[in-house]
Structures are given as structure tokens and as C-alpha cells.
Amino acid sequence: MSAKRPASGRYVVETEERDTGDLGDAGDLEAGEPETGEPGFEPGGPETGELDAASAGGAGLRLVSELTGKEAEGVTSVTPADDGWLVEVEIVEDRRIPSSGDMLAVYRVEMDKGGSLLSYRRIRRYRRSNADFGEA
Image (cartoon, rainbow, N blue to C red; front, side, top):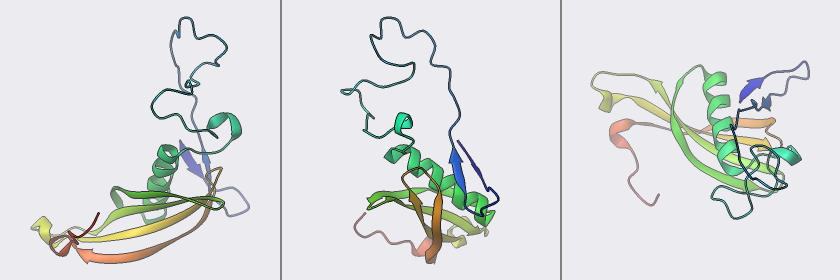
């Protein structure tokens, strides 16, 4: 997937086509389309133009990394919202030596069901050594 900023100023997530290889006897399924009982299946996937949770998390991570110009540590949460997804991404804002002094931040990204960026903001900033080890 890649994020591109069209003339409208809104980011749009585009998915890349993948070669699924020989599917053998896949019945009526399109190439690459998961069966309902397969792990990772969620209604509203690529055929409807809507992102599933895993795709939303990846898209959020790429958007925050691209917008901030900083290295992403990872996705910390993906939550369905009324009209899309809320994704939280942890970013290294400032590298220090030793790494326990690194400044980290968590950004919340709001995307619509198709992956267009609606908003993002930093919701927390902290030193790696002062990370919250409470409830995950």
C-alpha cells in the first residue's frame, strides 16, 4: 500500500496488487480472496473498497511515518470507529544515547473506511525509560 496526497489535500491509501500464485481448485473465489472461515477474513475487504483492521493499522503506520518524517516503532492499537478506523502509532521522535533516553510519541490517526486520512494528532510524548507498563 502507498499513501498519496491528491489535489484535494486528503491522503488516500492505495493498495498494491499481489500475485497470489496458483490457487488450485478455489471454486468461485476470485484470486486472493479469502474464504469466510480463513484466519484474517473480515467482511468489507478490498472488494468493497473498505480496509480491514490489519490493513488499517498498516496504512496508519505509513501515514504517520510519512507525515512526521520519523521512524515508527509500531502500531499500538487499531479500533473500529463509526465511519472508519482509529489507529495509534508509536514513533521515535528523538534518538538519544543510550536508547533509554529516546523520546517516543503516540499519534492517533483517524481514517475513513476506505483509508483516507481524516485527522492525526500526537496524544502522548514520553522518554523510553518512562514508558507506561500499566494495562495494555
